[in-house]
Image (cartoon, rainbow, N blue to C red):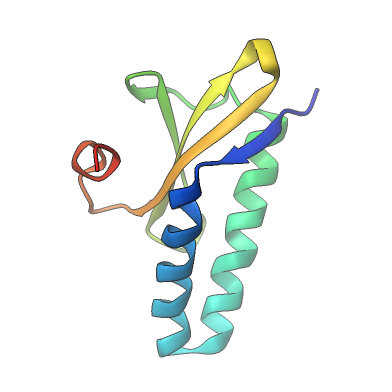
Length: 99
């Protein structure tokens, strides 16, 4: 059973910032980042409970090849995943998500 995915509005900014950073290094790197992000979202949609809860019901998935985590909640009753943020692995998620 596949869950639908809903992004919080802030997620778009997270993705743009990361993509712009990688594009400044190499445009192919930016494309690879977006590919890995889509790949991770597909995996989460098909197996949302595969990852342990890290804090306040939030689960995280580390992207392959890139130091970014997807932070998400699972709403089982709605069969929905809410992506809260896509943030660099070295950022403090509690500070970031409280903004």
